[in-house]
Length: 356
Ligand code: NAD
Image (cartoon, rainbow, N blue to C red):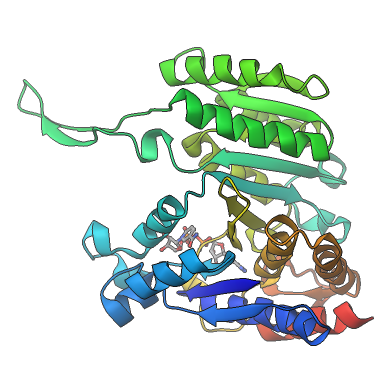
């Protein structure tokens, strides 16, 4: 089981080091994992002049799974678009065919007080947002700037989904719902967008093969509202790239901190790229205060989805729950009566909890 480890920029190296500690502990217990590191994002640009250097892409293709930190930083903001760290993310997703992005929004009961919503609205929250990752307005052509007939500049993008792209993400959605609460909510903007009209029709068609799953449809504006009004009504949400980008960040806040949320991006064979839902947090990089739990939980998702090691995945998740119950908190989830710890100490605490 070979894992490409791409730490990236900002807090990336600090949080990845904690996930590696946890995986190393499992290796000592006999799990046969091979880890190989490579530069990516701004670090890739610094080393090779490219946010996704050829050797890194080669390693990612050879590996069974990819574990990433995060990329980006103000020092790269002035670079031409093709060299910006974030291009590394888009390119690796495309190159590996990672079309399904799974973002669980799960509230550890110990953190109910850290949510921006009232505890009773979020207690027991466990939803999965499934975002299509390789299509939609982020990739549709044509796109660009032009000058219109009045001599004024216009910017334009193309929202585009093919039937097969909708069908394959819908399949993942129904399959995920089958393994969970058997409810799937498809989010679109069918009242105004042609893309969404096709989306809804295809999702309904796929639903015919899944009579056990209760399918509903919701407009994205309503979904944004329902996520803060009554988030527990959802089980699995499936949606396109742009709507999913926004809704998954919104859902992350329900769980207290973006520092708690893992994510997985899968191809058609469950090869995956696993990374925290947050970015490289340059504002806190190098200070040993970032929360590493999202990255550690991403490693757990990797064991579950790519390697089918459910017991090992649960072992990590249980260890995380244990350290939270013991009162360990990084700054982002800290409350006065708790034990405030740094990034490294949190990683160490999870390793200790794995054994008890
Ligand atoms: P961000 O997620 O990096 O940070 C937003 C806020 O959350 C900041 O205040 C940060 O300190 C805090 N935060 C994030 N992760 C945390 C953690 N683990 N522990 C504690 N606090 C945490 O988003 P941003 O500030 O909009 O972007 C910063 C950089 O990250 C940009 O260059 C952006 O392009 C990049 N980015 C990368 C990815 C990725 O690599 N997948 C995703 C989003 C943003």
